[in-house]
Image (cartoon, rainbow, N blue to C red; front, top):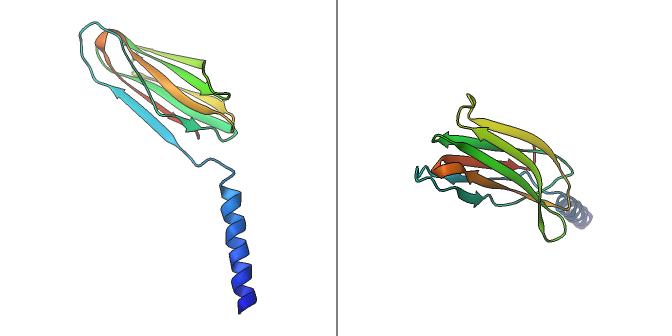
Amino acid sequence: MKKKVVTLMVAVLTLTSATTAFAANQSQQVSIAYEGDGNTQISTTGSVTGQHKYGRWTVQHVEGTTGAEGVLQENCDGSWEDVDYLTVPFFDSDKSASSDYYMAGACSYRVKLYAMDGDGAKAYVRNYK
């Protein structure tokens, strides 16, 4: 009986330590409310940790007459770098644009969202497809 308990404990500890080596599926989002005041508003999502595979990020234009832009940022060494861009003009029928991006495991990723001229917008980032 004692041998079974020890074996079970070793198995649990092994599985626990193995799963902490990989980031879990994560997602973050940010919204900017429509103001209509002509001023560009900027906001940033929280960050997700890469998993050595492709993740997906999205920018949506929600309301207004100009559009929205997003910049995917990567932090691998303590500073945020711009690595990808999306633009959604107000006349885009889908009102949304998405892109897949390879997210390295040692890096964090976030989206900086620009709602042009007081328009409403949303951005999403996730470390899985």
